[in-house]
Image (cartoon, rainbow, N blue to C red; front, side):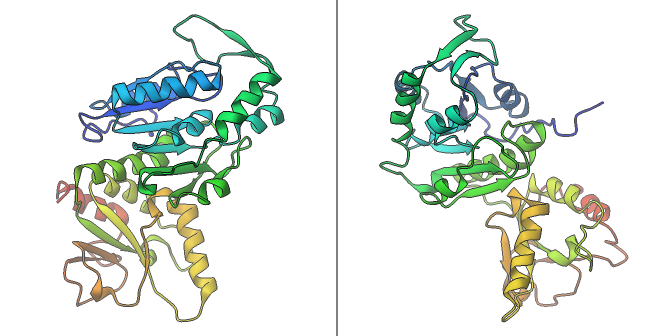
Length: 329
């Protein structure tokens, strides 16, 4: 059966270099490296086997950062801990194990270990000693020192991760911490739904790209019972490839529970793409953008309005068809 989450994005990070930093007991042949190369075919992806000694590992990474000059660094788990310390480069940290020494002790990562993926030197096994754990603790303590531009660092955190829980620690130092639906290890769905949107935001910022803006009313996404409408998320995923999407919702004067409810709904259903893209307003005519998809008419909106539910746009499939004819315009 065809995997619905395997898709190529040839324009994303085109001509740019991505450096991947693997996690504990992994290697440069991690499945994530393969996924990056398959789904971002026009990007150049590099990865390196990390030494077991953490001081040697971070030294190697600093050296490769200077040599390779990557446009983006992606680190997962322990690799996220290392990547946080590679200042000056845009970075995505997926389930970063900032407290890797504690994680090792709590999850049986001390003693005899087997590498999860083949390594260039052919080594298949290693011993993690308590003395080495102390060295990891010394290296992890270098996190969050001499912080650079916080706009360069994104943290992605699985809401069902059983191994590391470092989102609160991340948020003490950086603003862009986002929850996604998933566990510790990244799969195709997580990569497509959580990592790809962030890579797109970074790529657009680096390129100075301004995509056409679509505002989408939350009432067009969900019904009166707060159930997502058929094909609504399919449409969002499609539109995200070409447009900058913002979700809008009415702004009540005093009802904080309503605001919290909308925030929780978008976080749960829309997830990563809703981060910093949710607007509460009762003044739709003040919105500056290209399109408005709404269940009610807004006669003063300056762009093109698509009235969800009328004869032309009865369903989200109708909206997908409309935008497919525009070719991203």
